[in-house]
Length: 511
Image (cartoon, rainbow, N blue to C red; front, side, top):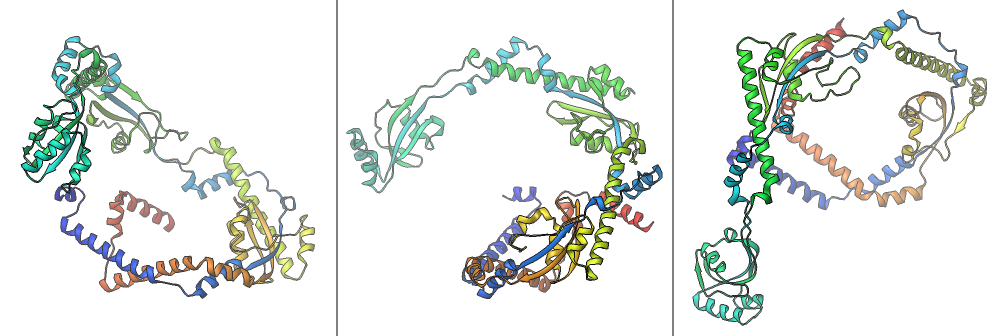
């Protein structure tokens, strides 16, 4: 227990104290929750809020009413690239030469010696055999005299459960167990000396007096080489491959110690060397696809080296070894304009059109705000006013997600009679000019229904607020402090790398 706590960075005292606090907190909040009943007005207010309906008239800004931008010049695209450098900069990549020695890869080429197979079988023969098993009914007795009566009744064929019940006991059934699985050694000796159906006499065992009856015997089997040959051969092949892999690593290391570089040492050892295309620290190639065979450990080793650097031989697992050389480092940089010009032009064009669509929407909205009817403005802009059937409520907002988050947010924050514009569509691909015609209060009958149905939800919400408020007060009174750096480290964040990245961003903003 103490060792397990230590492995997890805890002490028994600290863990038990935290557990007591957690149990106390659970009991405290459970007791409150069981008796908490939120005032009905809470649920009623929620119902009124959710069912409040907004009648909205709106029209889409027709792209045909907006002048299309001219194709961008290279200067414009270059400036656009710089504005979006954070998104367009390609990460640092590296060309790596990786020496791999793998026992698993060597196995198919390994020839096994029949003598080794026989030796391995002889060594494991006893463990491969299947022992005799028996199903035993055991009844504990208070003393030897009672055990003798139990034995006589079982021998007559009486039901073991009924016999045991007479002494306030329950029979213990050990089904298909080998002799080693019977807890009491003396009981095991007696049970495995009986035939099927036989009943023992009183047994004074290490754990008390008992009587046993054998109801089933399954004879054991002796393992033969032929019966387990595939298993034994697989084990011998694996062991031989591991030995061969180790020999290769020794040859490689001897060559490295003598001054050979990674490639030459691998050649002397007969080890495989793979040279990659430029890959990122995450192991992806220039197309964003993972490069086969690059494990996180190999990548970390490689990206800790300088250009031309070679790692030491690293054992990645049983029979698996690698070493890495950094052949070339390609620094992070923006891609050449010619390489991404078509895609960049399409994005630039989309953003320019969005700017013009927004300007057009603002222009049309300004006309409506000056008193021109929305229908007249829409007609002049080659569009048509439409209404949301039944009105827009917070309850049916999910069904109208096609309108887009920005439009829904603007609609619910607008005041009656207000003219507003917003991007619409799930991708923000359109602009709408809209007017909030009126706001209708929720129907009383529907609010009453929700008040009943949402009572539990209101109580749960109140309970969550109460629990959070309790934690805040406790934190304030105890003057608790939090260490964000340690918290990040606890979940595996490299805080040094994070600090450097944040410092880099701050430097760019200052420029």
